Image (tube, rainbow, N blue to C red):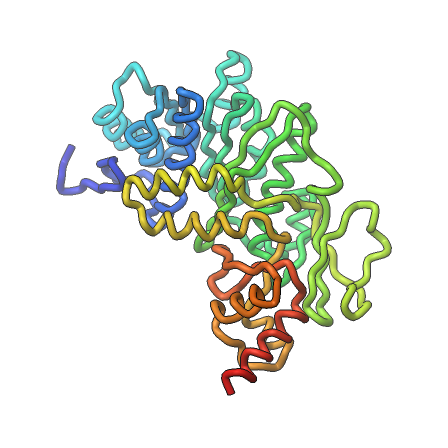
Length: 373
């Protein structure tokens, strides 16, 4: 391998050439590596299907850092074969890896036909993951992990609501917490697809970074879609308040603060974005290997796990309250001092998650400013 063109990420050394590689997505790969390593620790095995491998960096890292026992590295572009095979063969024993150049859906159905199921199926697609939301289930072992990507933020954040209906079977509307909505649409659509074949899914973690949405989910043996975890989010343009809306509430939805009509987005996943216990194990592993930035990220994700399915931005609090908003840390402390729960969210560095209303956030923000002045 020519060191002149060598790239290093984690424990992997590879060349890129004409194959796809996005350095900015390292955080999504790091979290995938951590989740896969925890799975290997808990089950004693890890068989990975990386169906859109590009230059092969994920496959390399799953083997070198997560301890994968077997890797299937696939990409639909046969023109990258020289790059991919050079990267893989130089790092993974041939008896532990398979390389192919096929459409991802053909791979999934091939796995099902041969009862060849995988502990981790990684689908790092460009644009919407919709073409793979049902088919990837056929290649995943019960109890195994599914790792999905979406880069089609405009559709899921409500800027193209008609398209969101086509892609997710849900009508997405634009509002200040729409990036979280995008994650919940991906989870909800995957859950709905799993239920149709008698299975369920549970999020391990849900990540938004830059323009990329990444969701790690576990495949469950039984359906788990309920009126509590699958429904709608209502947003009031009049006063900025949110509320969750179940199917049996449709047709009689009013803002509880100002009695105005609310816009409805959904349906989508309303349950927790992350599995807190799993994140804690990932964080411990990240500490052990010195990934301090990932420890910080996982700590924030861990704290935001059990909050309502939306957040309040500082800009919205200031605009609605006509005030100069205090620092985020001060507002969080002020809410906590009044007995409310409030934490950071990784989704927006200028937002908070809390179990109280926007109105209360404004009141406490104003009180804090008065104390300062």
